Length: 354
Image (cartoon, rainbow, N blue to C red):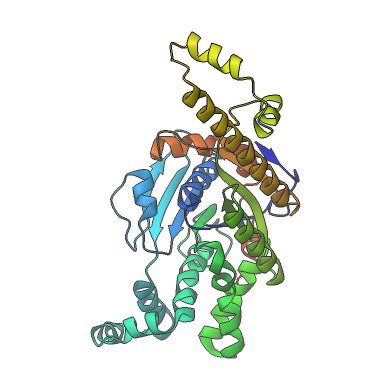
């Protein structure tokens, strides 16, 4: 189910950043979004930056490396390519691209300078991770990074850091641009900032209908908006339908469920209706009603943001490649409708590049 605006501002997005509090199913949802976009059909890059190999586990494929690897091909011609971005490899690539260090870069790695640069300064690490995604977004099918050719990827999905640090992660290039006023670092940081702040980039937030994940989601939305970034959709994951209708929920909440009726139904099911069992069921029904009340309160808070909200059901059998495709089917109406148009004759979708 999807609620909220029917024409969100992220209709032209090509870079879909997915964040969420730990335990909300962020990687599962990012994978489902990538499949939904690929169904248009499209060529989609699905990336991760936390080194957990969550994508490979979701799709049951070998661990991803620093090379882009196809992990899914859909019957309609769309495909998803996976990439696990590693800071050290990204820094070596950056040094070669801008400073032509060649073997000197390998020597820096040998003496520990690369590890030092990517661990002692978290900001540098984040710049490198985002820079790799920026490069993939710019790449054209003729092998260049600008020009009239269509982009290599019609869409990019980033399984990003959690909501607690997503604003900092996405704004770090703006801080670097302020520090480095000239040179290739300043140029690239400025270009990345323009991409992230443009309509090509949206940040989707994954949450559960629980107080802490919802509160972090609301705080992240405020932080993103304050930094000039664009929140996209809220994906409410692991939703379970109420076990009782509204009338029964009201009765359970107030302790008015009819004991005789419960005993009768238990007997019809072949279960001995002891007083302890009936009282236990009444207590569980009351807890369930209070849980539904809490979830509805949290949903109302999310609806107040004005963002599109999509609910995904809990997967009773756990997460695997098949169940992720089921979730993707539910996301197709939202994401396929807002898939980025192909690049125009003059590379219209890449105008933010420096």
